[in-house]
Amino acid sequence: MLAEATPTAFRRRCAGALLSALAWLLPACAGPGAEQHLAPFYTHVSRAGGGVEHEALAGAVTARRDALDGPFTRWGLRPLFLHYPYRDERSQTQFLYPLGRVVRGGGEFKWWLLPIADYRREQTEEGRKWSFLSLPGLYFARFPDGRRTSAWFPVGGHVEELLTWDELDFALWPLWMRSARQGRVTNHVLFPVLAWTSAPDGGGWRVWPLAGRSWVDDRYDRRWALWPVLNYHRENLKADPQQQQTRWTIFPLYAQTTQASYKATTVLWPFFGYARDTKTGFWAWDGPWPLVRIQRAGEKDLLPVPVNPGKVERTRFWPFWSRYEGDGLVSSWYAWPIVNVRHESSMLAERDGLMILPFWQSFDRLDAAGGGLAYEKLWPLYQYEREVDAEGAEVRRYMFPQLLPLWRWPDLDAHYSWLYELYAAELGTDVSHERALFGLWRREVDAGEDRVYVSGLWSRRRYQSEGARVSEHSLLFGLVRWRSSSADGLSFLRPAFPGPGWPLERVRGEDHE
Image 1 (cartoon, rainbow, N blue to C red):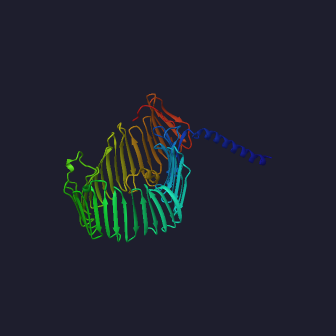
Image 2 (cartoon, one colour; image 1 turned 45 degrees about the vertical axis):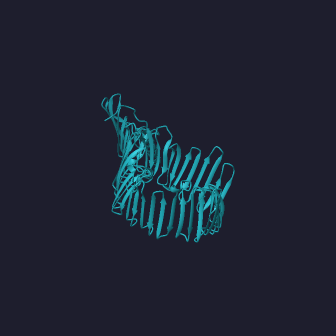
Image 3 (tube, rainbow, N blue to C red; image 1 turned 135 degrees about the vertical axis):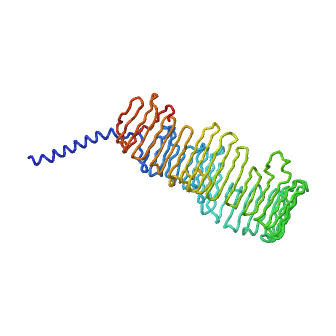
């Protein structure tokens, strides 16, 4: 009897010990309103400023709220897709970025995956309009008035309002095609061999490569023969005879263009060319192209602004040095395409930039409304940004390393930089976020709290409570936690497994050191 009772008693003692352990552990578990930091496997932490972030698989899975109880502002599985429920007044999903995107809002829906497919839907006052274009040459569309169009290139079809055409019909292209654009209707047979155009204000015909003509009353009259050898064009026909432009070509030997006091000559196109306007003083020289080009604007200083969009100056001794000035841009190249120095001026901003391929990129932009953006990248070591808004609030962003050699592209960084960045930070006037090595180390700082995390091993939380400085620590997945207060001294906190177990809601207190 004793032998039979002993195993039973042993099992009872084991069960009692297990229940006691569970009774101790259950209150020690981190609840749904507490943080867990188990990077790179899973992270659920409070973001500085009051938001919340979930991460898994080193950052591949991400979900973010800007407010504790607010909606998600970003979530996705990188680099496959990222979804922004509300961005620039529209919902946006980026997938296989930069090839794919879905945009919703403002009565529109757009979906495309370049170069495979493009779908667009728009709700107008007249009704719904949609179109679908995809490989291999499929196109379907429906218009608010009920019209439907479809096409399968090159077999046949009818489309409307596509690219620059008002209408386009074709069958067994290039055998036959009919296009309509701004009232001009053109029929093509064996494109591009035969074509004829009819319009209320002009017409045209073509027997390629023998001869052809196209004209629009009061606009232009263009003729050619033995394409592309002989060309004769008259432009701007509505103007006075002296302001009309005439251009003729014996390709590639000689070409000449005249208009009022302007005359341009090309010899052995495109290698040698010279143009001059005797009235304004404008002149330009190409030769031998593309190595040497010089262009002077003439009476630029008589204009009301220093750089007029119609007045361009350039000097090029390729590839050693070139300079362009016009359209609000001053750009100089040294040892093209290695070094570029540029200044851009517009009504919105002034911008200075420097590029030394492939290692250095930088610019400094000053906005007319106040604020601006400074950017620099030393590839592949680091990337830095400093952004200031119109009120003077500043945000600095760092990334080490930065393996993408492309120009500044924040969306591309959001999809791919987590794969290789050892350290990334966004340090603001009031809020700062720092992250390193797949999220194993993090820091979140705002006016109320300073939280630091080392995955599973240690975490520290600092804040002020009723004027007292408080520092809380968590060790070994939250199993050991304590608080140190300048008012109350040292005290131990209940375990919170898996830790650190800090509350998601942050303290809204005084600024801390």
